[in-house]
Length: 233
Image (cartoon, rainbow, N blue to C red; front, top):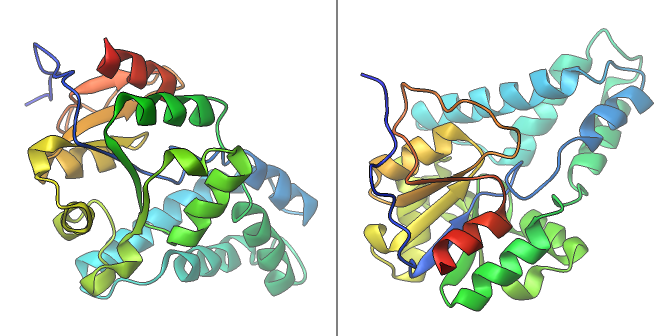
């Protein structure tokens, strides 16, 4: 049965805004340029990142979750094999670029606006908390985020969209599921959070169609600034 958006979207202010990091806050476009710099096709960036998610989810499902950086680097070596002469050196250069990505243009003003509304603001990433912190520092937005959370610090390290990942974010903040809002660009993250009882907001910067086989978001917005406007109205 197709997922449908709530007939009356809940725009009440949450106690906690939980933000995904990779692609939701970070602009991954420079990864394609980094691949081209090492002699590989830029379009492999999409293949690589999709593979990272696939393998991270698979290991979580098998009860053997691994750190994001390990899965990401292993995936890079796989896609670079046959494309470059020195696979390890090329993987190092691309990972260096990935760990220093810029934030989307709406992130700094959006986080400032969300923080000003009063809820606690935290990141909840499948990657390392320090990577999220460095991203926010580069964007000049670290002061607007109260807490940096990572699934790597949770028992078992289960990646989102496993229920345990969202439970970690809620336990770390002491907020009930229905009082928390998960914000992400990934429909799978929105679906997972909804199944864990959280409210959800899908950030759709590209005007895409939300998959109808997943639970629909409570809110759909084109940017973090638009999200703050909806919640503050």
